Image 1 (cartoon, rainbow, N blue to C red):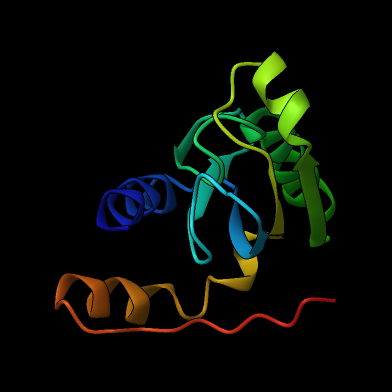
Image 2 (image 1 turned 45 degrees about the horizontal axis):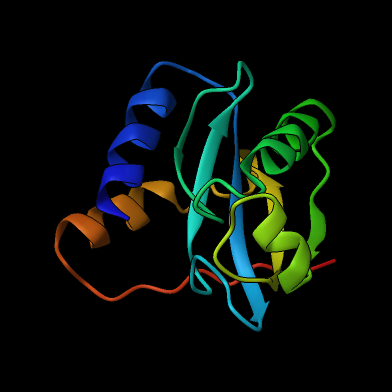
Length: 129
């Protein structure tokens, strides 16, 4: 998470518009655990991962939409085991990803950055609606 935070800080300092994607639920086998994050800029750059590459392209599209519209979205991605093997994935499973514009994080970002740099345990709660 610290590497994602450092890149987010760089983009934030440069005035980049961003969105944050967070894995909020998983069923079956999932490549990333709940809490995994991806931060993306309006021009498609990103740091972090929510699926080890399996659905990052679709998530990046939703991040761009969140930046453009200011609207958050709860997304569900799943694949059957048979389909997973066909596209080169080791397992099936389903993930639910919450995508929100970074503006939601703006007021808490300094405290979050400070806490992570100080190795404190932190939690961010977002209403999924």
